[in-house]
Each structure stands twice: as C-alpha cells, then as structure tokens.
Image 1 (cartoon, helix red, strand yellow):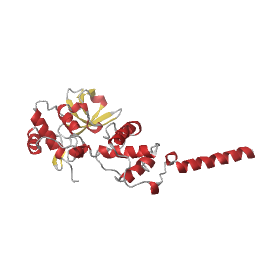
Image 2 (cartoon, rainbow, N blue to C red):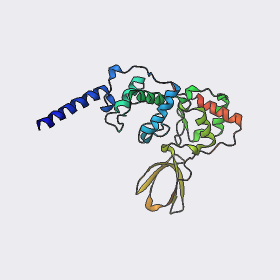
Image 3 (cartoon, rainbow, N blue to C red):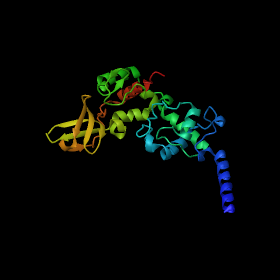
Image 4 (cartoon, helix red, strand yellow):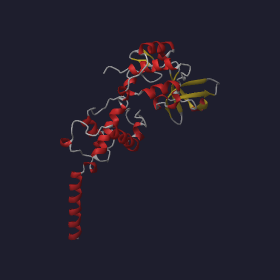
Length: 267
C-alpha cells in the first residue's frame, strides 16, 4: 500500500511539473511570457491558422467565421479584447461563463490562430477595388439595395448590415455575393417560404423554429409566428432572398464592388 501511495504521489508530481511546462495541459497560460505582438503572422502562418480554425473553431464560429453557436468573428470585435496578447489568452483559456473552451494546441498554433482570426475581421483592408465607388453608390441606390440592407441609419435590416462590409470581406466575396448570393448565406439570414393551409404563402428570414411553430421576419420587415398545425409546407430550397445581379455589366459590377469595399465603418 505504501509503495502504491508513493508511486501515485510521484505520478501527480510529474504531471504537475509537465503541466507547468506545457500550459496547454491546464488551459492556464504563462501570461507574463506571452509577447504583446504575434510572432507568427506571415502568410504561411495565417494559412496554417486557417486549417487549425476549421479543425478547432468552425463548429461554433462557422466555416468563414460568420458565427452561429459562437460569436461572429468577421466583425473584428472581441468580448475579451482584440490585441494579439488578449486574443492569445482568449483562445488558450477560453471565455469563463460561456461555451468557449480552452483550445488545447501548442503556443505556436495558438499564435497562428490569432493571425487568422484577425484576418477574418479585416480581409477587405488588404485589397483596393479598381472600380469607381461614387458611381457604385448610385448603382446601390438605383437597384434598391436599401430595401433589405442598412448602412448606418439608412435602409432596413432584412439582410445583413453593410456599414463595415468593406473591412470584413474581400473583393472576391463581395463580387460573388452580388452575382451568386445563394453561394453563401449566413445562418441568421437564411430564407424560408411558409405555405399555409389557408392557401397563403409567406416568405421571409427564419428567426426561430421548434416542433410546434416557426417564426420569421417577412419581406415587409414584420415579425410573424405560425403554428405548424396551420402549415402545409415549409420550403427551404431558396436560402437567399437577395436576387442575383447578373444583369450588371463588368464595369457596373466593378463599381458596385468598389462602393461596398469603401464601407469601412467608423474605424
């Protein structure tokens, strides 16, 4: 019994020593040893961070960082602070009182995740659109985009707000969102059509759904709730309410993208 107790004590001591040397085992970072600036943020590091993100983070934060069960990371705003050191700490130990857990990887991998997370919130800053943003703004108004999108206090919130879309999204994403909007639709803006037994059809953005009812925001911006006892069918085959702007010529498309790219928020 004494031998067993001694062996257990030795094992506990060794494990504790290993944990001190490798904070990933406990989730507690050696904060004093963490630099203020990310030492690993080359393009190669960020690419590796993207792969790590898909493995460890995308389940909650979405494949493109758009959020879901976890926070939207494309906004570039972070509950526990946005400096390199603060993001390192958040990823290493998680967020107390939330579903965000500690990420059990090496320090180098944490830094690569930090680089990629910061890239998610500032993709558009790396590129300069070749089109004319002033002409693009007129096209935005002409095509009635404010009927679904809000920029500052102008427009409606049936679709995503665009105040800082040019900071958060790159040029390829912006162009694709115009010509093929159904290629990517954030969970918070996925559309459904509710066919009622009365013969009425209501289209809108799904807000919530359970076994008994479904709630949506209709095309007029009104909140609607329907009992499933009164629903004949729910269609989800067209997840985007936004029409494709395939009628724009190459120059018009470039100008509209340039306008969206110019929307960088108040920063």
